[in-house]
Length: 236
Image (cartoon, rainbow, N blue to C red):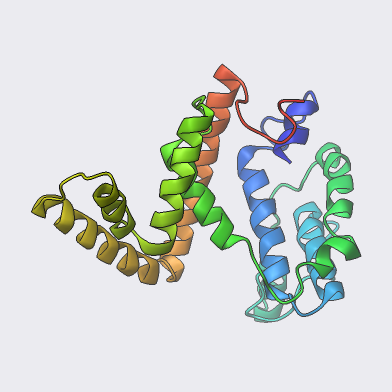
């Protein structure tokens, strides 16, 4: 979605394909997959339900595919279930944006792709490992092969065993490990475990989503200034 926004002149801006809208659509798509990972048809139905939801107006509500009941994620269906007759729709997705993103939704709802989502398997582990690598060798900074290789080697250890792996690396390099270093590694690993447990709460998920949005905006601003330094096919 961000690529099509960048490639299509006039698609961005107020009331169109904003960064916030892109994040919302991405979150809705992910939820549609995770909530219905036992059925391709259910996944596809809810994917398009989220799109129709965004296209709905007071005159033309399009919530037939949205789940019904008071506990529905669809605010219109929830209002219907609770008897709220004062419900008003937010400004809908513009037709210009809808036409631009429709082909993407078609690609993301094919049987071939959704079949791979059956069972609810995710890439979270890989994404977490990648985040560890990019923390040491950021995408926005040009890094040579040796720097990237070193970042990957260290990240593998940290990802699997925490900072205790760094102490083993220091031992192999004959670097003396003092009490401050030892305590720091142990305490950091303990905090990481506690943070992982706390991150499963709903409040943490909301905060994480907000932080992710801010980080994406900062990365996009950096790319706009310096250009893309990392990406599929960038060296072609």
